[in-house]
Image 1: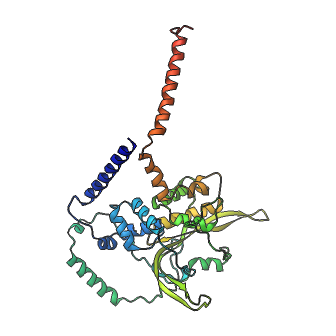
Image 2 (image 1 turned 135 degrees about the vertical axis):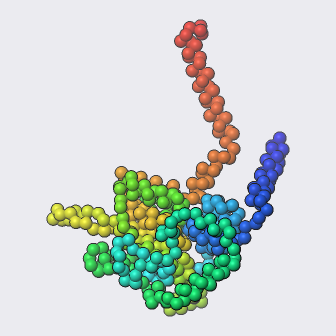
Length: 378
């Protein structure tokens, strides 16, 4: 009987998988992976960030296989990532070296290097463009030609690779405390289990690979309900960071390294005004900092991450958004999706046990009611 049950279950699973493939293909059109990579930039950036794997092509394949489900695509990417060998460690990446594509500040209007709006939906009307339904490759080619022609005339005089940090100006004025360098080797949450209390490197890793919706929701909750924070974005940057690895044959030479490419990231530094009690009893306003960084262009998540970073740094038993166990254990896409989804799996034995308990309690209660009504005689 056991063999028959297992065999029958296996056949049913195989048919279910076939049906899944049928649902993906039944309209007779096959999505091109390159097309997904070119046209779903924001979704690809989100999947790469949550899976901690920077590969636009792999993300596009995962999105195709998952039929557009970000959670399933992240699961596929994480599973593949776990099979990859770690052959090298890159040198420390400095955000000051970013080749910026977009750089804005909500704190200051005029900033050195200027506000660079870049590519964003922030200034669009948020109306559906029905003309996209009839967009052709010819239209794209003509538009790109005109765009290249127009932008070739207006050259940019700003060095986008060496833009100064806005927060440095506040530090020079004494309005922001200097941060001490912490050269301690960061903890790796992909190799060691997280233990509480966590280090800041662990918190930042978990936040940057947290589910975009969950991080955004908790960041929003911190603004509206728990602490009623209202930070200001000191600086938001989107651009590419260069990656270097040491020479494998002579790793001790500081000047000898290999450039292996760049990664696109979103970096945010937010400012939190807070009253501070001084020794003379006078309260002064000082700024705290929240930091957020993630793969690709994912600005809302990076800002929300910076809010939660500040919340977890300050800590408070009064608010759940300031509790690192509550936040860090509930924002992971794979963990949350997996645990919720496991409720669909067979729970026959445990449910039958609960059912027996309910029946016994019902029967026992019914017996007591009958005895109280005089229907049962000792």
